[in-house]
Length: 555
Image (cartoon, rainbow, N blue to C red; front, side, top):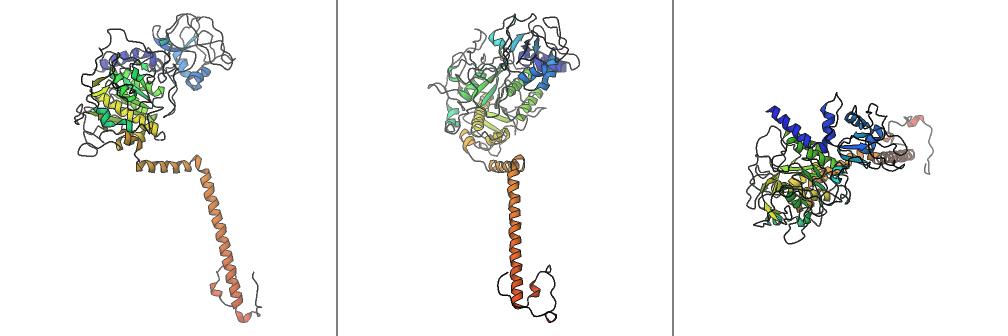
């Protein structure tokens, strides 16, 4: 059994090589240098004669494409001892020759990177880049298609960042400048329209009540499933390039099964006509991560790789479809990594016991019908919230404008849409706080709270966006005090010290004036010694002192 799992993992990792080549190669053999196979798709860079007027070296290349010069060791391990077109090989990180091909880690991004089978012949002559400008892409002797050259890696924006820009093609989180390709005829499932259109999910959730406050602007929702049909009209301008973990061709905006497209429609579809149901967060952008093409179960390695790609692309929300098992060991680790990056991960509730428990910060969703019937028999006490999952209307593939489906993945998509609304409306909340808000604002279902079957209850987009939570106000106050006590609290401490000093000065003046008044009264009356403080000198007895003149004036 162990040998079978290892074989499956290696097979899945090989199919994902175009996206995770460097990860596999670096970890394959820590002692012997890792090498790219001749027929393996990789991300690579062609060394030029100079960059910004200086010879190139691995440290500068790592800083330019990976944002960290110290990662030059990764590039070195990926290329050392591999023969270059001129017969040489990499032995010194500071000695590179123009025309060499350097395999770079999968998350590298920048002008000059290419994807495809590593060339074996020298590149065609090209002018060196001008000083101060980016390195120009080098044309190899074996031309690559635009799809093969597209880089799926993209820098990670801050959570709740700006809307992905149109026209960019450098990463899976960016909107494509070229249309998605159509799948070959006969390879995909037949398109089918809804026989019994149902709008109960939209009526029940009423996301339009939340839209005056939030529509999901700036949120990148990664959908790890069967891909998304980017040609669907209701998703126009809402689907990024994505990634295809199965074939490694760099794009996930096509779909042969329809599951991922339906999920995307529930998140971000535009209600363009009476037949199309709008998504919960219509101004968010979905990033399709394709981990399956033929309807069979996805390999665990591909599932985990899909999550890792979504993290690197800067997703703020990750929705895991029915082909992803959140309780699988490698997947659970990838989910934990995403959560540690302040990303909200939404997945279907487990249906049975598992050796690996999903992370507590995961939003575990169950699907229900209009009558409250569960889509599946979920494990007791493993559901955080529920959402519509039976007879749910969305969009289909191959031009189908509307169809009705049932499954936990549709409840996951609806919950992910609500998370996008919350993240856009409350950008200061952490992922953990967003998860708490989703749970706390759900409409109660069942007899207990939380209920072992329904958890906190049915999600409520409007309440999740608008309802005030006392615990959040307490947390904000605590965070503010903590911030003031840290680097931002110097001004508060100075003000406090000045206040204390001013109080001491005023107190001293009052004591001084009080004592002067007492002494004056004593001098005028000749008694009152007992009223004096012990700090004052002890006076002699009256009969031993000469007569004191009466003082008239103030001191």
